[in-house]
Length: 52
Picture 1 (cartoon, rainbow, N blue to C red):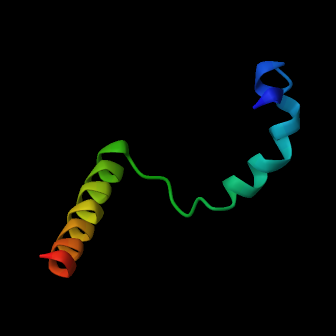
Picture 2 (spheres, rainbow, N blue to C red; picture 1 turned 90 degrees about the vertical axis):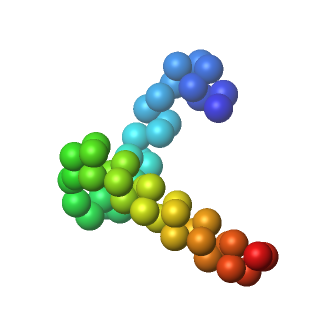
C-alpha cells in the first residue's frame, strides 16, 4: 500500500504476469455477470440446505 501512496507502481509489475496466467478465457461482461449470479445462487441454495 505504501508503494501505491508513493506512486511507486513498478514494484507491482512482477505480479501482473502471475495474474495474467490465471485468465483462461475472455468473456463479454454480460456472461461474467450471468455466471456470477448462477454461482451465487447455487452457493446460497447449498448454504440454506446446510442451515435450513
